[in-house]
Amino acid sequence: MITVNPNYSKLKASYLFSDIARRVKAYQDAHPGSDVIRLGIGDVTEPLPPACIAALHKAVDEMGAAATFRGYGPEQGYGFLREAIAENDFRARGADIGPDEIFVSDGAKCDTGNFQELLGNDAVVAVPDPVYPVYVDTNVMAGRTGEQKDGRYEGLVYLDGNEGNGFVPSPPETRADVAYLCFPNNPTGATATREQLSEWVAWARENKSLLLFDAAYEAFIRDPELPHSIYEIPGAREVAVEFRSFSKTAGFTGLRCAYAVVPKSLRAWMPDGSPADVRAMWTRRHTTKFNGVSYPVQRAAEAVYSPEGKAQCRALVDGYLGNAALVRETLRKRGFKCIGGDNSPYVWVSTGGEDSWSFFDRLLEKAQVVTTPGSGFGRCGEGYVRISAFNSRENVERALERMARI
Ligand code: MLT
Image (cartoon, rainbow, N blue to C red; front, side, top):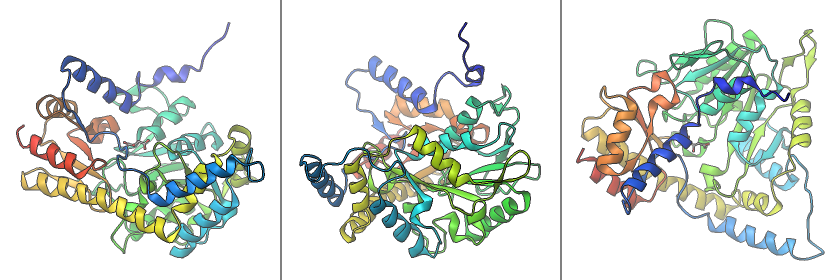
């Protein structure tokens, strides 16, 4: 008799964004022709930067000629891209990361979801609440939690985010072997200062714990005081893995390219207490289960670091940041408490006491605007919705006008 992984039955029936998509479809089926504006899932809407398009075209032509055709590439990514990443994203910011510590992949969602495979089954996992659901669900699938009760899984350490701590929780007081962090934060848009990240690095060093740092929204940081990478914090190379993505930086959600940084000096241990080489383990996993991002896509990602590419990506991100500022300021003037949206594409809006799903439904029905209910990100998200700035300026303006009616 074939049996299945029983941990899947602990999960909610479907993934948050699938739930939302189903509700929106039901609304559209019931109201054919309705003009729904999507400020829900963080999916980009603007076209790819011209520098990336030119690089893609050139690479496709290379694939069409015998002399320049490429088959399987290195699973970890081509040297040209890993070099460009190390130089521009890390060394230029004083972070000591080399190309051989970078692993190119098809998404930060996959990397953050897959990385837990390297951890012991008994690892105690800490997650912020609210939290990007992938960190939680993949640990549930792996059997690192008990059942879900009142919206929380037994065995996980939840770090409450609230207006008191600005949605930047401090390290736990109880044991945790690994902690997931995301800054600028999805879903709240909160950012962490150098001091706050230093506190986390010190905690991880002291407790022999691991930080899994998701920096997918790093390109939205405009405050020069804020760190973009965990490796800007001294001592982080020994305790942190970082995840980055071209999805929001350069509009690659449909093209797919991201990377994980696993430093050579990262410390972790075998069950008998002997040292483990995590970078070698991730190399083994990546080369066994993944065949690399396609050559044209890696060339497009490389173009992000060209002078034109940098200017075009900055303009793209600036456009979304302009939308976020408009959402935040408009809603604040209307009396809503808002967090984020200044160094982040997400604005976290208090519903003023209404439950998140009912506020979501009201916005959908009365304004035909899709948001993301905060409670979908955890118990501490109840009473909030997340508004994404990923849309055209025109649609954001129309959405805000319609929202004034509710
Ligand atoms: C989100 O809306 O939270 C993100 O788009 C999800 C993702 O990047 O996987």
